[in-house]
Length: 375
Image 1 (cartoon, rainbow, N blue to C red):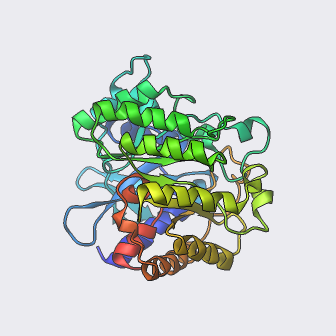
Image 2 (image 1 turned 180 degrees about the vertical axis):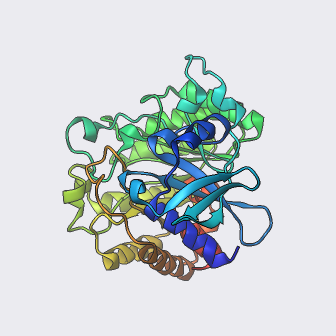
Image 3 (image 1 turned 90 degrees about the vertical axis):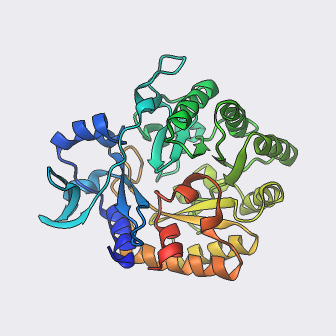
């Protein structure tokens, strides 16, 4: 498979989604790493263009647009899974086998597949608490559907997440972790819960951990929590700005959009002091009405301070205000990825050097693939 094909296929699948025949949904959920395919979320993999056996993950959110996607998943008894485009084979697709720990129960009698899921080879992700205060007060970010992220329990006790990580680690299925949270109505915005969870994880699994959280305005509290997190095995952090277009932020994020950018800058500075180069990130969502030049200007601003922006295409999710919005085109995404990667290189930053989390796993965006293989 050509290098350009892998990168483009990934971006195309994330733009269009992939139709999954009902008869394959049952098999995927029972036998493969697809515990949420019936709710429109799945991970498939493409073969590395280097021919070294590496799998390139593609995390797909199949919203309403997937019903009209030109791509469809097909299974052949002879050659496994394939993606077809307009009834012609487009590429082979690989699904990770369902890990055994998915069927195990936590001490709270919850299936571990409802606590955390693998979103790329070796990369386990859990949304520790999906009960966002912005959702509860009618101020949800319009592109967000965190409350319906996958077939999971909304609030996951730290102990049960740690048990799930330990089970996956013992099986050899988990190499690193992402822990994120909806925004909580607490002084730490949910970060304290993530740090506690990381500490519990460390007792049962020797894995690097990434934390994602909202800016914390109490800088002393933030510093103390992050130092504790580092001791607990956290190597990587991301404080997600979501959008660099200042004229749009209050509209698409009625609550979060009111957080001043200076708060992100101060939080990033503290994170860099503790975790260092190539381990501090932010996320910007592309395709929610923003201006691309403002996005790139924001990428450059963050990079000049040592922070890399993980550009993620908007995948309109059922349950979000913007569930009917058209996603950004493949060409638009590839162009932005290339411009961002060039900025990181000029600033001496390396997307591929992160230790843990979604950037390291690479399933949610093709930006890391562009950094490795080109457009």
